Length: 302
Image 1: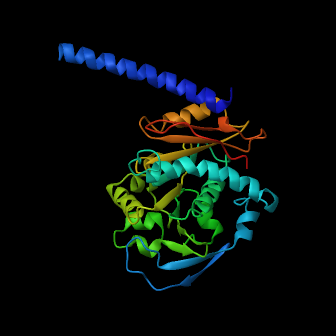
Image 2: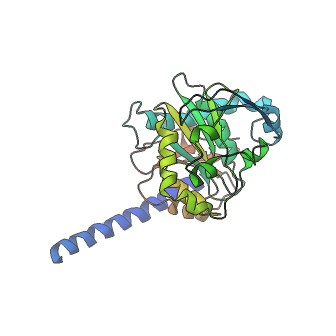
Image 3: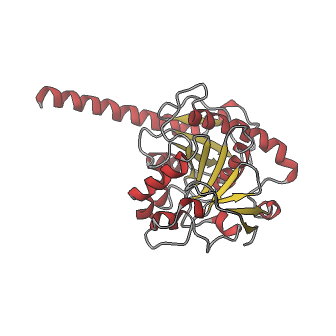
């Protein structure tokens, strides 16, 4: 049995026990009482959710940074990300299942650094944008260590934190269209002394509603900070409808996975991906639990 299976089984058992205790309690109460990209300006589209600038992405630079797979692994990884994205898209758009509330807002996280969550965020976004009837907005939500923003040379550009901090900064002015059809990008924004408080604010909920409500077919992916390292990821988790947790094979201790999942609380649909597995991928390496999410399919081995 894998680390993820053990983690999920233990978490389910503990939550089942907690639920039973809660039911007894209720009964008692009732009875008693610049680097990888360059920009070019384009005409504003006049919509708060529409990009006003275009980002030309240097995929070679992203590959050198380890955020895209080597050429010889592209086909294999593309197939795996196709299977990873499918239940997320189905839950977001209600394809064959009831759509999840805010299901088109998806947070990609990990327990600790180095598990491949940014790699997963970028490649999942690139895979999702291939869908015929959706567009994708990738948001650098790791505001403490905004790796994608930094690699793209956008550290001094307005982004998520600026939009949340200052209502005078429109969402559309910060979103960058890209030369990759169907994909847009929102940088992390300029640093703030209190990023957790910003992401936990009512204004952040309003911004998330703008990002996800602009277009019913827009999928918004947030690359989040690690769950066990900062509190920003916990605040961000409150505004999304789905969470994807990346677990690095043969490295992340089981108790760390459990602790990370516990920080998310109950009732939030969560999927887990086993990353960098040396085993042949099969149906047992992609797991989901929580909410109305059903069985998953498989995981990335990148």
